[in-house]
Image (tube, rainbow, N blue to C red):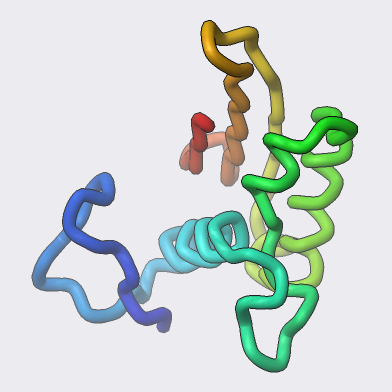
Length: 117
């Protein structure tokens, strides 16, 4: 069981939920937590978190490096990722003011966590 951490405005937000029992939804919550946590922000786990913004907006981070960082985080801090088929795709596209980063994480070819930065 995981605590329900979605807030009003998140996709599929449910005001009446307090916890999550579905394993895939727990995995999605864990992935989102890893992606949106800056390394060093969790007391006692200095290596937890992806520093996603730093990786996307810093020169020298190619798609494969970002993908590897996410995979390492999932392996280290997300045991459910070993129980399900989790694929990670990272790509960039030229934008007008800046490039746009796309991160798509699929679970069992059925569920998806997508980020556009």
